[in-house]
Image (cartoon, rainbow, N blue to C red; front, side, top):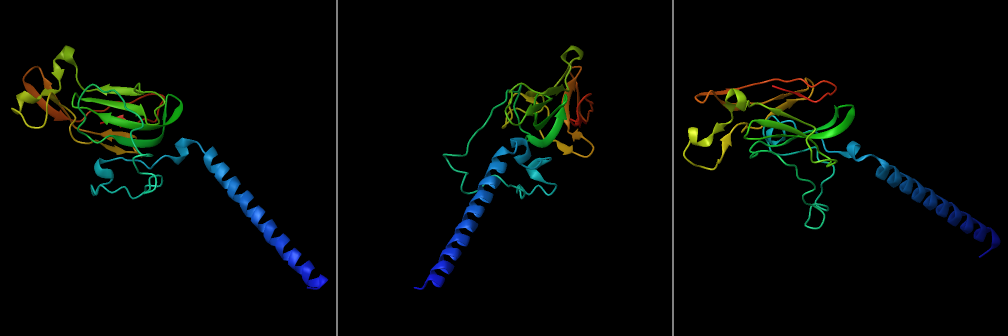
Length: 206
């Protein structure tokens, strides 16, 4: 092998090595930037209705974090639990990037059969609710409907309040729901309600 050929070979090796190092540095930088992104920015998309969409397909087609590689017995399971006052038959809903009391959060909305709606920090910062709305008023004899008033058994125990899943209109910042109540001991109603919350972009409840 002559000197010229050796020099060309060394040059090619040096260039290839330089490209490899540059590629590794770019990859490491990308990984570093990805791990530095706040969890809130990597959160899943909003879940605003029962079974994810107006067609009630049950298919969440915008999933970006869960894969067949990480959904397994070792890596997938319950992250948090939140205390509520009654049974939950409605699907909990999720809205990302909601500002409540000046803080931007991902929020989980839970409705119960005791006619209450809870908003929780979906990232588990606290198990205390960010706010609650109660559609009953025991002092005025307004309660959720006892199941024995309308049925003698079945798969529901306790009360019948907010049973169906609410719908969130993110643009209008509004949750639409039906709450059943028993009023003045004999009158029953299933109606909508509304409430606004100052210093927040949390949905009103209707």
